[in-house]
Image (cartoon, rainbow, N blue to C red):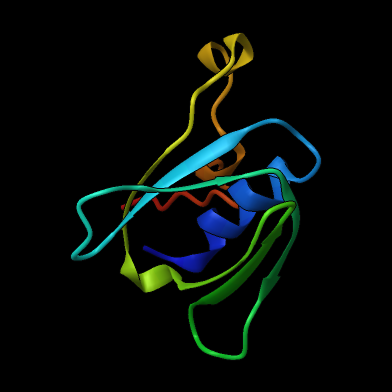
Length: 93
């Protein structure tokens, strides 16, 4: 998975009660991330460091095979920010 959408979701979680579950390749149980205080990119191509109230978490975004988050009522009517494209181009043939 690319780092950009993961960073967007984690940034949106800062200071909220939202939780994010991720499955990493080779793992049977999801990792749960909650109480996010800070998110930063690492020097590696896909490295992310997450600071929560409980833990420091370092992971490589390329090892994330799935993520999910409980949605709120507003999510039924809006496209998640991580899925929105900021630049749309069309090509005529």
